[in-house]
Length: 248
Image (cartoon, rainbow, N blue to C red; front, side, top):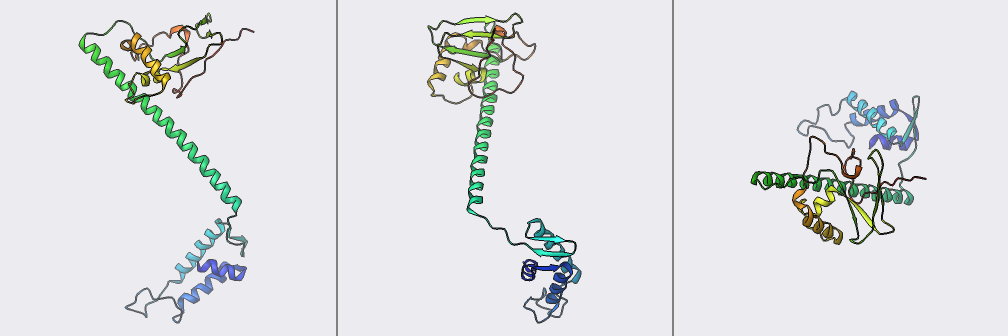
């Protein structure tokens, strides 16, 4: 603070000028600066080298904060930073944006945790089935994609020759695509109760048809049904977009 006050009062100065004045002030026994040892007032109060080193550090801090500028040996006062209303609004907008990013990352982290819990519960359930000797033959391999539409919809399916692309034509009927983590959550494997109507519909359909036939295979990799590409990146929460083959 004393270095800042010195430079502000002078406008233009040098390091030596500021350091010499502060050394003289700190060394003056009549100054208002107290002795470091109250029991021994005659003790040397401050070390001159230490004062000059502190002045040098303080000037570097002021320069880094753009409060002063330095041209060779001359130091010039520029002024303390002032925050305008526009700067405050900009900072508020930045804070809102950062909070939004944190919320998105938190939601994605929660989704990954739910997927992990779901897979762990699935493995535990399968181990119990195999241990009881009541394991069914066959199953649904992970990962998979569930195509959901209305019960009476007419769906046309075309598969490319290399079995890498599937074209679904729902004839203007609404449809949704769900990944395996969505289905496991709908079946209650994530440990959370779902209230969404779509989730409940998926859960009922899976439970009635193949709830006991969902298995998490790791090795060897099974063939994907309907030629759907295997996932090579982490699962994306929510509804996936279908890939459509355009002939023309």
